[in-house]
Image 1 (tube, rainbow over the protein chains, first blue to last red):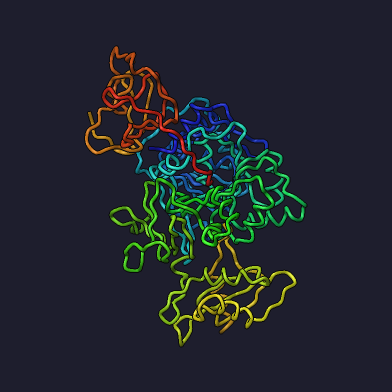
Image 2: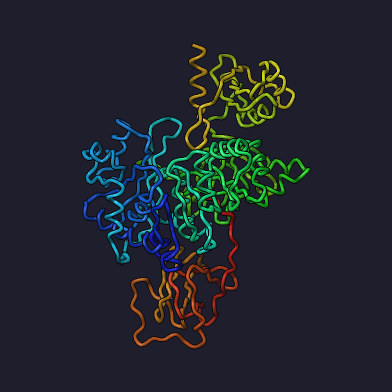
Length: 500
Length: 103
């Protein structure tokens, strides 16, 4: 197995279709296949062990991804916001590397990698190859992609995704050539995120044209979607929230071709998805849950699930709108208790996952995967009777108050239901009496005022008193990461600074 | 005849067909294409071999082929003139059940 198999099939099946475009620049599947061979030749000539790309979304991404696969070296997309010492450390960790970056950075980074090419130079060299690449190493165990994740503790770790993981993910979730000729997917997630990699692979295998957005803004997203007749898009919750807000200001969405929007990468507020479904009544919504270590999606809440939940009077069915749906057919999901035993439906525990696409591996670290292939995600959650999965945050974020485990997500959902609360974060803070106490940071809705005591009463009435926030603070906004994940560590740090 | 492993590849000895194993039963399987046992990816085509008349339905790129029991599933990565089978029993085309696009 090798990612090049996927691209070769696309080049054989629909080589003349446009594979990817960025502004006026575009590549067909046949051209992308040839360019991967060209890139591989240049990489091989440089005598390196990795191909890194430090760039916004550009054609260098797919050419680099498949070029690395063809050359038999790992592909390493780097965060283009990184600078200075941080970047230097990552580059030192992947040496000897071939680095592709924007023209402005080439000179400065030249000493830090064995070969450094500007994006346009890299693309010109790659596209110089007119012949189809003849061969590549079909080693399923070879590393296809290394993705640096900062995690919540700060020190960057590189998740290892081997060819067999990514190819299995695509074989298990995408139908070859399943896209209609007019289909186009708008890709605005950062290229160094697993969703960015998955978007390239899924689109190539299904034959769906990728329209890249170099960097996200709600206006650019809406304008590009309209101009390019985009039919599909993946967004993280903060993007959808901004798109929805901008549509309301503009008096409509104006994207008549948009048939399907999938979202993931963080918790989607119920208000945002409900508003989006009203603004885009013709659009199918899919919620995807996955991790870097699982080669992207492992569970989906599909369009029919969305509509059934939104239209239902049964609270158990309606609640599914905030679930992440059911496991892919090629993946198994189990909820386990602290003693490692599987828990029945309705009970909360740690989400464990098994499947060919699951890697669970970090470079230089011991794998957390069990001998029989189960990977503990460190995400807390519960399944309902029909297998719908509800996320309850990271295990490490669980608040332990007087020996009782409290899920911040449950308390946050309750607070968010209060009309004066626009956003909130619940974290544990050190407490002499209880070990940890519940602290809530509230962002008020425009023009609203509410007392802390009223919010405490609101939670106490709906949940047990142990879940009532001992501390309530008001802030103008909460810290979010680029992919829409609430940065609880920062919330906690800010609260602790406030006390000292 | 050989034991099949998920992820391993086979090619036809008598046409251009290539497949990858998506699911495989335990034990030896007599996988054929065009009526002749398939070979390893680097294996030599059969000299003078031809697609048998009763196994000439062809394979289509990207399609999946399964046994009636569903225990063997092959994905076609290169199309060809021969059709797939186990022994003399033809494999059937697996109906696509597309999942909603999630990325």
